[in-house]
Amino acid sequence: MMKEAYPMWAQLERDSDTQLYKKSQLLVISTPQSSYMDEVKRVLIKMKMTFKDVPADHLLKEFCIKVPAGSKALIEPEGGILLADRALMTFQDQFKKLGGKIIDGTPVLSVEPGEIVKLHTTKGIFQSRNVVLCQGSWAKMFFNQLGITFPLKPMKISVAYFKSKVPGKYELKNNFPAFYYGNGVDEFYGLPAEEYPGMLKMTPDEQFVLDRHPKFPNLILGAGFSGHGFKLAPVTGKILGDMVMNKRPSYDMSHFRLDRFSRKSLL
Image (cartoon, rainbow, N blue to C red):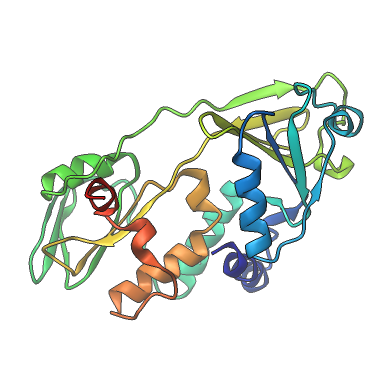
C-alpha cells in the first residue's frame, strides 16, 4: 500500500500547495537473537525497495545510537515523516473544498443498521443508504452494540519526548533518520526532532480493520489505525470509498477482515 500512498500524498501536497511530507531515512534495528530483520529484508526485496545493512558500531558513530553487540540494522532510504496536524487540516480543507460537510462536536450515541442506516447523535438523526464508521477509540463499544465479536482493544500509547544531549544532532536537517526497533515481541519507533526542536518522539502501532458488517453490507467499518494507518490514509480512504461504491478493492482484503482471527483459529 505504501507504494501507492507516496504519490497520493504528493498529489495532496500539489492540490493544496502545502508541504505534508519530509523525506528522511528509515533506520530499522533488531536484537541479535531475533529473526525479525530477516522478515523485514524479505518484504523489502519482494517489493523491490532498496536498503543497506548497517553495522552496530556505525549506529553509534553516525547517529549516536547505542545498541547491544551483534544487533542487526538496516537503512531504507525512502523513509520520511508526515506533519500530522497539518495533514489533518489539509484533508479537511480539501474535503470541504470538494463539497463535503464536517460536523464537529457531535457524538454518535447509537447506530441503527438497516437498508437505511441511522446515526443517532446529540444533534439529531443522520441517515444514509451507505455509512462508513471510523470510530477510533470508541470502535469496540459500537462493535459490541452492532453484534460484532472482534478482539479490538483500545490501548494506552506512551508518547515520550526526549531532550537532545547533543544540540541539533537528532534533527532532520542533520540527516537523523526516523527509526524503528522490533524483536518480534516489543516494538517502538522514533521520529527526528522536527515537531518540537530539540525533542525526540517515540510511539508504537498495530494493524487495522477494513470490512463490511457481516449482516448489513451497507455498513462499512474502519478501525484500529493508529500511526500505522495514518501514513496509509489516502489509500485506506480510497479503499473505503471503493467499498461504498461496490467496487472491488485493488488489494487482498483478507488481512483486514473481521473474521481473520476466527479463520486462523480453525486451522
